[in-house]
Image (cartoon, rainbow, N blue to C red; front, side):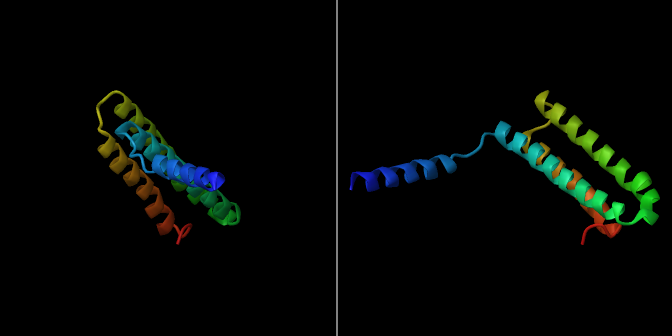
Length: 114
């Protein structure tokens, strides 16, 4: 009986901790991290796609790689702007999503993503 109560208490504590809202700082860091993670996944998918299509090497070199470079630099600048207090957490989250969307639209347009 005691063991069962301890298990229930542990589950309740874990569930309670999981529902603690994130601070704006944590939300901003999470948005940057998730966006960077998604960009990495899309880059890997694009790399794999173009590795299998050597005839499209120019497209990879002239469109895809530069687009990722621009978006990664913009994401970095956005992160710095947030840390300097020039951008709110809400704006950072919106702008990070917009940067990710730019890459998604490009890759869909090029047939890399569907």
